[in-house]
Length: 192
Image: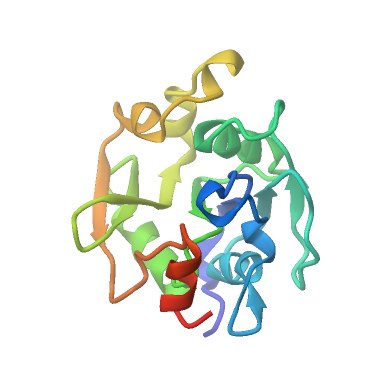
């Protein structure tokens, strides 16, 4: 797949700092699926991004240059991770993609559909076959800034609460791109 040169002003944040409680606390970023780490697969989804920040307590080797950061205190949840990642961006993007590291079927094409769906909205998120919003989306940077809580309010805040005031488009998952890996059985079912 070729890089979409019209995607200028788009940056990505990969959330890789979860506890993986149902996977015995393993570092999901380093888990392999078909010989590639989940982190590499997540970074691949941001092929068109000008810059990618990975929010994780530990850095994992990557083939693409990325910035690693960790929220303070660590493991503050997706809102703290997203906002920490946004703060670490060196550029000032118009659109910010966010992706959980455990969604290996999200691709550059997925992110392109999400970017297109933001037209007339504050953002767009992937929804699975059951209509549940997944942690794969694109947000208008200015709209996100407008709902940003103070630093103390970020930790432990539910993502749906942060996003509630925003007008979000829902983009149906194509095939299995809405699947995430929460358990070892999920990984096995994806062929890992």
